[in-house]
Image (cartoon, rainbow, N blue to C red; front, side):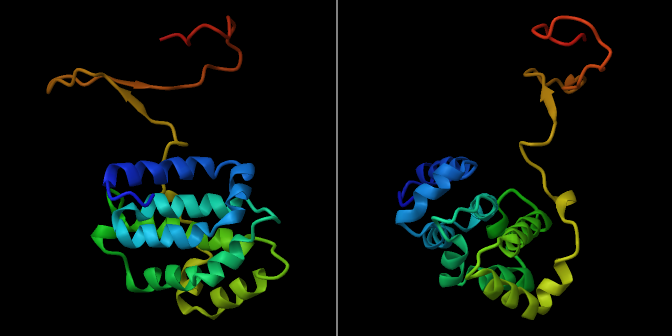
Length: 189
């Protein structure tokens, strides 16, 4: 992610984000500080904040006793930075292709993931920071899932030929539970 080539560094971030789905991969971060690296990346590439927040959410949701992500977050003052972004607002540069509301929802998701970790040493410190914040009091009880979209949600497949008169959209649907047939066959049209 330290490449000067923007395309290379953006794809490196996306690859690292996908690796964070695995607890084993998260544990492999034991030898370095991924939080500091991600914050340095964010300063160099502010438009990648949505991807970065998704990656941090994945890091904190894959808790491992071998890697204390909360310790690293506190060491890098991540909760304070996220709360500052919520309080001061986000610039268009920081949001990339996403709306500010969607990026705020991602920040809140990261803060909630940090607050839900059961780290015997650092959880209380994170809770104290969040509880002391008047900004967090406004956001902590709200559901922000409506602002989030992503690859986990269903969508449409678009026809490759896009005419002005007709754009065919195909919807991916589940077949009814009483349908009979071979599971290897595509669903009926």
